[in-house]
Amino acid sequence: MLTDLKPQPADKILALMEAFRADPRETKIDLGVGVYRNAEGVTPVMRAVKAAERQLVETQETKAYTGLAGDPAYAAAMRGLILGDAAPADRIAAVATPGGTGAVRQGLELMQYADRAATIWLSAPTWPNHPSIVRYLGVPMKEYRYFDDATRMVDFDGMMADLAGVKAGDLVLLHGCCHNPTGANLTEEQWQTVADHLEKTGAIPFIDIAYQGFGDGLDEDAYGTRLLASRLPEVIIAASCSKNFGVYRERTGLLMAIAPNTKARGEAQATLAFLNRQNYSFPPDHGARVVQMILDTPELRQDWASELEDVRLGMLDLREQLASALRQRTNSDRFDFIAGHRGMFSRLGATPEQVAAMREEHGIYMVGDSRMNIAGLNAATVPILADAIVAAGV
Ligand code: PLP
Ligand code: TYF
Image 1 (cartoon, rainbow, N blue to C red):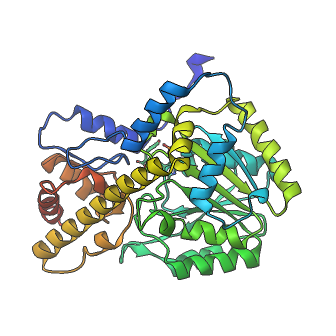
Image 2: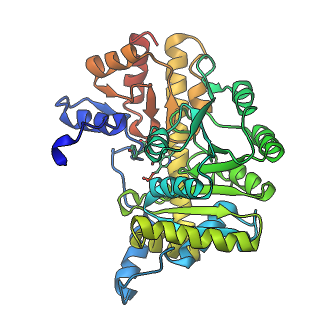
Image 3: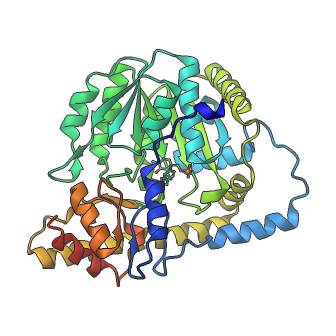
C-alpha cells in the first residue's frame, strides 16, 4: 500500500516558510506565511489569552470529553462576536472545529452531505487551501473573477458578471473581510449588491471569516457577514480564531449554519455533530475555552479588543509608510493601493520573475503570486522593501 503513494504538491506558502528558515542571510525579510508579527518580529501570546489560560489552569477541574459540537458557550460567544443580533439564535447551528481550516472542511462536508450536485464558486484568486480541499472532496467547483490586476482593487463588474451564472442551491465562497491573498475588499454597497443577487438567485453564501478585527475594526469587518445573515434564509460561516486571538496552534475555529427555520436548524445541528464524529469526534477545547472566557469576561474582552486594535492600527501604519516610501521613490501614486488594502495581505502585482529577483537579491520572501504579509515589516525594513520593489521594476 505505502509503496504506491505519489508525491503530493507542496503548499507553496508553507514551502516558502521552509525556504526562509534555510536562508542564512541575516538581512532576510519574511513576508510569507500569514502569521502576525510585531515590530520585533515576534508573534506574541495576547495578554488576555495569557490571563485566561492562567485562570483556566487554576480552575479547570476536568479534561473529560466535551460534546461533539464542542462547548455551547464558546459557540454562543462567537456567534455574538461575528453576527451580533443579525440572525436569531434559534436558526443558527454551530460546532467547534479544529481551526478555520477545520470549519471550511466541515462546511464543505455539510454541503456535500446535503446536496452532492451543488457547485461551489471560489474567487480567483483565493486562499490555496480552498480549491485544494474542494478538489479533495470532489465538490463541483467554479471560479468568479475577483481581482483587477491593473487597479489592484476588486474587479466588481467581472465578479458580478461571473456570478450571473450561479444556480439556486449553488454556494458562493466569500471572504468575510481582509481577502487572502489580495487585500482587496468589497465596499458596503458592493456587499449589498451581492446580497441582492444571492437573494434573487437562491444561491447560498459560504463565508470564510479568518481576520475579523484586522481590517477596519471588529464590527466593521463583520458588515458583509451580518448583512447576508440578516437577509438570506441559509448562510454557512466558517470562522477562525487563529489570527484575531493569536491562538494559531491551538486550532480554534467555528462552523455556523444559518437555517431557514428552527426545525431545519435542529437537523443541521445534528448533522454537524454527526460530521464532527465521523472526522475526529470531539473538537479541540483549550483554545475554544480561552476564547469563550475572554469574550464573556468584560475586563478580558476589553483588554483583548484593545490589543487587537493596536495590532490593526500597526498594520495600517505600515501600509501608509510603504505607500509613502513608494510614492517618493516612483514620483507617482501607483502604489497607493497598498494603503487602501485591508488585513494582513496585499497583492503587489509583481511578476514571478520580479518576486524571485527580490528573494535572490534582497532576501525578501513574498509568496510567488506577489502576496506580501504586511505584518512582516517594521519601520526599518519598509525602505528596504520599497528600494527592492523599485529595483525589481515592479
Ligand atoms: N481562511 C483563510 C482565508 C485563511 O487565510 C486562513 C489562514 O489562516 C484560514 C481560513 C484558517 O486558518 P486556521 O485553520 O489556522 O484557523
Ligand atoms: O495564508 C496564510 O498564509 C495563512 C496560514 O496550508 C496558512 O492562512 C497557510 C497555509 C496553510 C495553512 C495556513
